[in-house]
Image 1 (cartoon, rainbow, N blue to C red):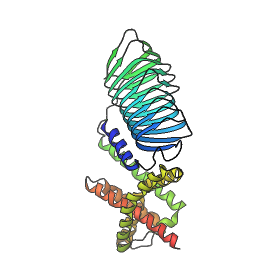
Image 2 (cartoon, rainbow, N blue to C red):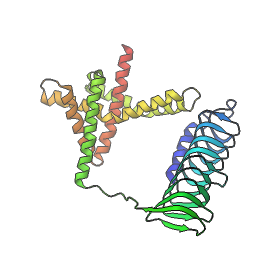
Image 3 (cartoon, helix red, strand yellow):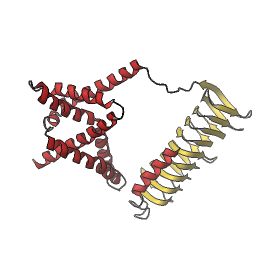
Image 4 (cartoon, one colour):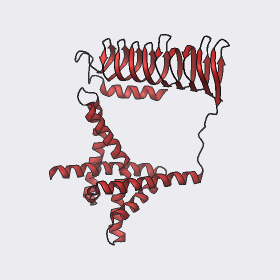
Length: 352
């Protein structure tokens, strides 16, 4: 899957060299072109590189990113994403995304595993359940103590494969099963194919989204009413906020990710990233209120009511955002205005 490779290379290109494997003895955060983790890690770790090999135990949760990844050790919990992934060791629970994924005969999954990939081959021992989403899946002399659910185009179950629980697979898959394989129960399910929603379904979906935005606006008004009281609607301030917004959209995620891949900055980086994502989500609310405030003051000109201004502006902005092409541009403009407005308010508070 090309997007997995692209995502991995993008992330690694940003951080290769930020934290080198030789920067300190037995580091938990490692990014380099070629990474060899040949020492035990106690606690959670983040490991990334073009070629990654792990030979020693990681006693904690591990996030592993790379192009070629080889896991030859014991890991407690693993989230692995890459182009070519090979697992030879023992993992308690695992979530794996990749193009080519192989669990060799020496692999041992103590509990559950979920795999998303293109070409997937599993052997070894899995002590509970397996979930697989892929194109070509090969079950090769594996022993699965629980159930396995496969959504794929081609499924090949070779001889000596043992599935003690239930095998579930989609009805449009091509299944080849050796007669000597042992399967407790077989279930075929219908693969759900996406269809275009009806007009009524689309209207209901958009109404739900709009109502959700309005509910969040009301909750924000109750919790942080000063946020909306401090939103300025002058032309100069809006232009200034757009400048702040463009800068913050670019700079904040870079700062957050750099913090996440340093020794002491992980908690702060995560908090900053979460706040960034929340700011993006509420952008329609903030800019919608600003739009409603402008319309109210210029055209309605009766007693100011913050709730009605928000209702008016958010509704209009949401409807405009549904217009093809135009809506995308409007959403982006509203995003940078909102980000800049929030940042501007924070600057004003700091000056006071």
